[in-house]
Image (cartoon, rainbow, N blue to C red; front, side):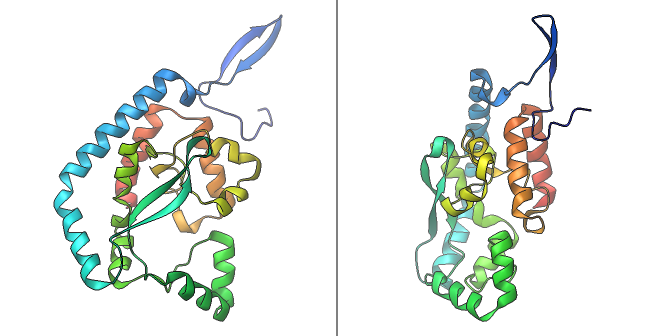
Length: 228
């Protein structure tokens, strides 16, 4: 068993190269046919789900509007494929002065500061509204990202969309993140979410890009339902 961590492990083929034994490491995600198939699936799923959940969209819109002042949607700048920056849409789940609330909370809670530095998330986030807490628990705040998928900025399955500070934490693995569209779901979302370290999230994203297959995408989508 060769010591080659991080190398694509699915579909490896033996090849004869100048009389020596070599291995072909496929990168299926970058084949034109694979890209076309993945994009077709993204559009089919996102348009169908958006149509079916339109009444729920309207209900959530009303709940957000009536319980917290501010916009319905929140668009945060994220890095997409090839480094393109786009606004990842979500139903707004935080107070409009959330940054101030977060900084005050971190200054007054050393344990929260440690948690934030380790995962960039908080289990008890002071910025989250009452309706926002329910939306997050049910993962309903992520539904507007279907619009990002239709626009071609995201995919149904892919790496978790990150901001600039997070992308810097990927270090040399950032090249893998930037070769794929960020996903509405992915390996990280079905493998622990906030219970895993950031280094593990990076490893999940790298492994996904290196070992992409249509079968794996279907598996991740299927496992997302019970995970949610």
